[in-house]
Amino acid sequence: MKRLICLSVVLMVSLSFVNAATLSGKLDWGYKNLYLTNAGVTLHDDRVFQGSVFLEAPLGLYAGFWISYSPQDGINSDLGDEVDFIVGIHQEKFKLGFDFSYAYLNGWDINTTEADFHLLFLKVDFPKVLSISSYVSLEYDVPFDKDILPGGFIYRMGFSSGRRLLNRDFNFDFSVAGHNGAFGVDAQNLSSAQVEVNTVFKFSNMEFTPGIIYQKTLNYEGLSKDEFVWSINLSIPFVIID
Image (cartoon, rainbow, N blue to C red; front, side, top):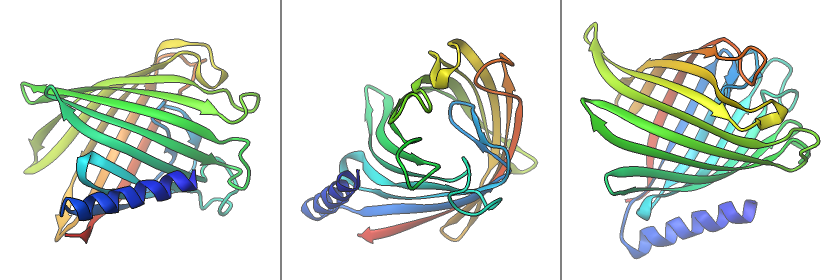
């Protein structure tokens, strides 16, 4: 996996030089009151710090890593601790936005591969209709050891829109998720629904984003449960080759 990440970074740098294009990136660091995954699973029900560093190159290529740290009992102590290595590509074709990526999920215990996953992710963004954007995302998790934690196929569908309220621009997102029996739970066509609201404060080239997520489970014996998540996030863009 390390070789794949290194190869991707070398490829992006080479493409930037050959095409005299920009090699840029972004640093994100934030805080959440709990760790809720894209599948709607609560991996850790206490506070976590989460962040990422990504490089972006010509042709829509990107690579980087994402981390989650739980300060409750220190690093590498529970499911709040995780390191993911990610490579992907984003393209716009036929008025649609396509984002395809591969991730290696190094979960707790980080020193072993027992709870690790390979993850394939695809998101499709559809054209706006009446200022409303819609999307669908598909995620396939392949575990190293399915006897410890089975993988599965997870999907999410939703729509988003921006609205100006109280002299500020707010982003609203509503989505529903389901799965084919992921993580050893019986299959659910619809397992949860989420509403997310956030707003962006800009300071120079930095962005500070507070937000909230309310999740409602659609099956109390399923993969998800009712949750309220609040978060703050700081984003800083940077340029390596201009």
